[in-house]
Image (tube, rainbow, N blue to C red; front, side, top):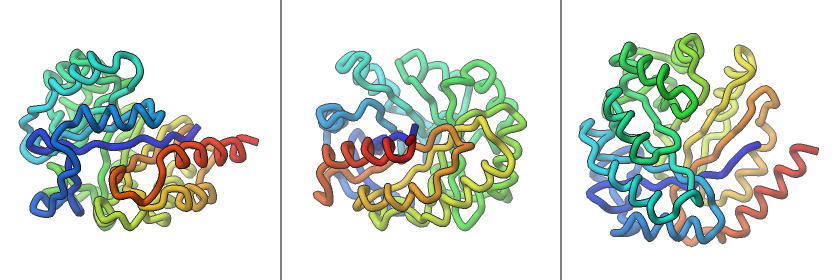
Length: 258
């Protein structure tokens, strides 16, 4: 069943939003990530996507301790998927030991495939592969550089390695609050439909009016894909009431399953 997962981007210990991954275009939402997690939990969200932006940019993680703080505070009331700078087996292990329920890994899939495979073999059910796209090419290192690898090639390689989950960001839309590119989502789902079945796709996006977007996405969901997770980052823009968003989502899913 599709899920809606709020996303928290961390930079300098603060909750921020970048525009298209540009670190010079930064909006600060909160000085306290735990307050933001508490806000989401109070609104009924059970799973949260956390990105260490400094880790994504430089590979030096400084927020693994935040995972433990969240778990200590909220116990089993929240599921954490954590990414940004996980570029070695040791860092992946530390994130899991700190309490991450899922780890998001991207750059080393391209740059260090053997290291990626080591992580995959150890944490297959916890691993989410990040394949972020800019004009049909895969981008890495916090979107600071691209590689000569298309979406189709990346998906092929991932499935052959036994990857079960993918998260994909459309860089051109990220942080703009323009909503997702439905054609981009459709393309990813069509790739899965044409080649794979038992696969879980996560689409990372910002949603200014998530209710209407959910109605659009309904038209492109494909039954061969087990789960479709929307991840959004704009809880404080005042564009919608989160409780109504959850109710709309649940109502839509009842229609989808019937």
